[in-house]
Length: 373
Image (tube, rainbow, N blue to C red; front, side, top):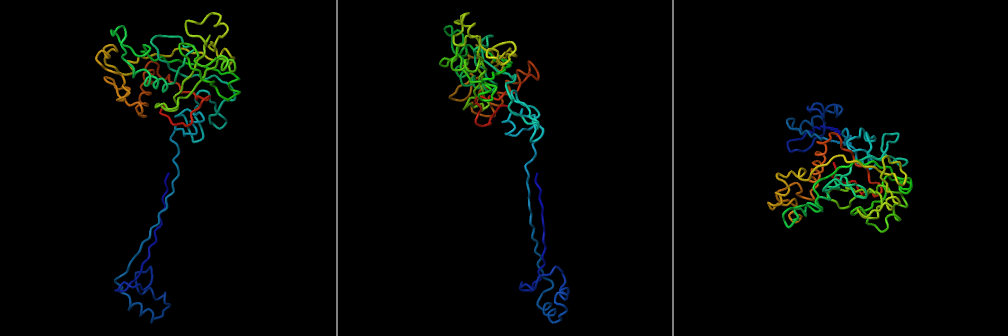
């Protein structure tokens, strides 16, 4: 809000023919100086004689004072501090009140969002890429920004790989789809006691096996089989990009090598109703699937696309050939549009199903700069 106050002062100055000042009077008549000279006729006559009555100069001085106050947030808009504390973007009603909190945060008595006083159920969506339906146990999953970043930098720039002697083409890992999962987690008391967080430490998996040194001793024996998270520094999709880890049974062995004895001894954290015990921390169910060809808007099937010499994305030119969806990796607005396109496709399948991201509170970002919409 801007308030402007203007003050104007007008001064009339009589001058003689040579521009010499004879005095300052607000009247336009020389005769009015009579009172000023207290009827001293000699002085009045001298004034009248010296001054040219047809010539006077009026000077106007204008002083303007402007006061500005910051505008009140538009309805629904949350400021940076509110978002940092866990307000759901777009839900704020006043500068000090959140309409809704993101998963894992709760309201205080003043309508602000804050950390919960202990472990709570947290439900949210995550995404993974695949070539066919697969078990999600002992795997890493990401939010919208995270899965698009992974596809952009690891998959599509190495697309159209020849297989079967060049008879067919595929992306790395034969990836052709994005699967959305609905996850509900409930962390353990051990995790919350250490950092007052809902997430635990992130663990990297490959082919169903933990990639850290002795993950069971360093992570799960201390905290239980908790869902971990990490933000992704340096991602062109923003600092809200995060990955989560879902520890399942026998997590120290690869898929196909998990014996019954190992599964029994190391049961993992997946269960039907997460309650925060060390072996019951999360559950997940598939909640939609889209094909990459559809997301990219390819006008032909993938095999024909590759045979025509096309490419989804070339990191050297920062563009695709026959596909523009992935053009301009570091363009913030383009990345925002890619996130919106992914979300819109899942919304087409299930309207009003989008869930907000939780805060990755085990490894929070250093700043809230983001492109997530």
